[in-house]
Amino acid sequence: MTLSRDEVLSKLTDYLEELFEVSRDKVTLDASLYEDLDLDSIDAVDLVVKLQGLIGCRIKPDEFKMVRTVRDAVDCVERLLATDALVQP
Amino acid sequence: MRRRIDRLWRLGGTGIAFAFIFFGGGLLAATLLPVLAVIPGNQRDRVQAIIRLNFRFYMSMLQWLGLLQLEIEGAERLKSSGGRIIVANHPSLLDVVMLMALVPRAQCIVKHELWNSFLLGGLMRRAGYIRNDLEPDAMVEACRTALDQGYSLIIFPEGTRTRPGSLPRFRRGFANLATLAGASIQLVIITCDPPTLVKGESWWRIPERKPLFRLVVDDCLDANMYLGYSYRSIAARKLVGYLEAHYAEKLRNTCK
Image (cartoon, rainbow over all chains, first blue to last red; front, side):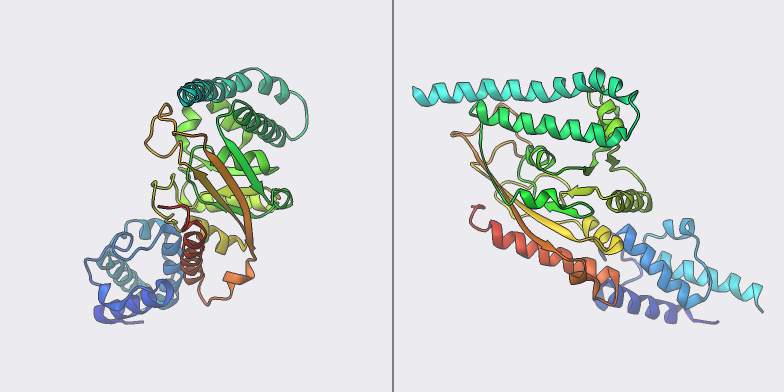
């Protein structure tokens, strides 16, 4: 699957709104998921499940543990999409 | 004069009571518990039962010493609450003692520092309480197991004692747990007038008059109430909001 960076961000924003009632205007690349958007570690698990559905591959818990901001999350998804594309050309 | 004598008496009694709980707990951990450990059977339940008995005795002692007055409403409903989460607001240091005195097979999440405590560490280990420094998923698993085994899990969602004069603000942990485990929630409302043993206050700052503690066993929320949402995360948020409003309503008259 190919998704542009903007599409990834827009999907992520959808999920944040849908799952955690985060208002869209608060979702900026620099926003911290845990401080600014009020997610907790259990929420992160729910978000990972949702993102896995989007990219069609598993996200390792360790990989998402490093994610602090919206930018980190977008980067993480992009990286996985890229490696995914390598495996399945 | 009479009031001064009363105050002095209560001050002395408070000192004794504090010494009792620390050294009593340590003594218990050092003497009786190792002996019980060699007797076959469920050690954890036995230790918890002893803690409960001690706390019952302790609460009677505090009343007998004239340090406080205690009113309990609906205590019998806490006895049949196995497998539920018991949620209470947290005005004072005695809340956990009162609840653990009333709830059989009570499981709770305890500050991890206590495991290293010289006096109480042994007690924590033998009672099998849940440490608060577990990784989130390990914590959820430990709590879920306790609920499945029919323990009542006592949680103070504020995470710390209420700031005097303000309404409780709940953290989301208990709601995450309730929504993940599908557990029902027994609400308990605790008030203390005048406030005592609040956060950041030394034990010897005792109140002007003998405090009245009231513990009211309130509604029990069935898990179905909050499992109907399309996302667990939304259910947990609604639950926190609902309970903050509920406690605010119930405590409005006591917070000045």
